[in-house]
Amino acid sequence: MLFLFIIISYLIGSIPTGLLLAKAVGGGDIRKAGSGNIGATNVTRLLGKKLGMITLLGDVLKAAIPMLAVYWYFAHTGLAISVQEVDLAVSLCGGAAFLGHIFPVYLKFKGGKGVATALGVFIILEPVAVLISLFLFTGIVYVSGFVSVGSLLVSALMTLWIWLLGGSPNHVFLAFFIAVFIWLKHMDNINRLLAGTEKSWKNKKDQ
Image (tube, rainbow, N blue to C red; front, side, top):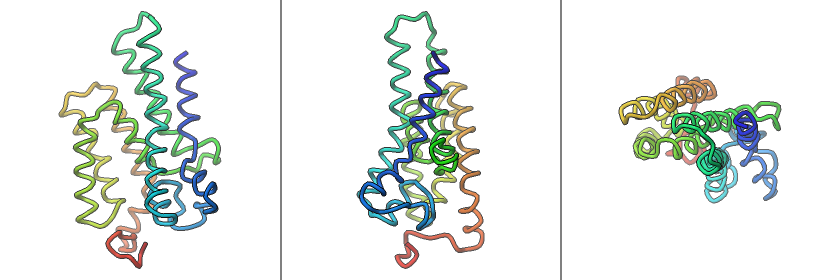
């Protein structure tokens, strides 16, 4: 049953929220404009803040919903399963949803960068660490002007916050695993940051 839940979580995570939303409102294929990414940042640049926020919410929920469903299943079906085993099952499904977003089967495994879906994962697993990270993310983006800088630094520090807060080994490992993939998916941003060509929210002509 757990294997089935993992597959379902991956398939739900693979749903390209931003791409579907853009096409629904006549915005076309957002992979061919802006940064080419299917996430909330590119949707916001191309279609406005409202649709960007809806995309963000959708990408968060496609991790959170299957994780909550798995937790409910194991908590209410009377199965002889420990708290640690439930935690592992929920964590695995969160990881599967995250991988679905960045490697979606519906888009030939070419997906987004995973930040919003990772947010959905840790809202369920480590909400206090998420609050710390959101506060830090807001400050970094405000000071630097770069969403990518905030995403990179916060993802890198999430493992530390979870460890300091006494999170389970499952959560610590998952945070590290997710951070590695977020950094790999941001390599183009890293190269642009180093070259001084990354787009900043502080400069309207760059948006």
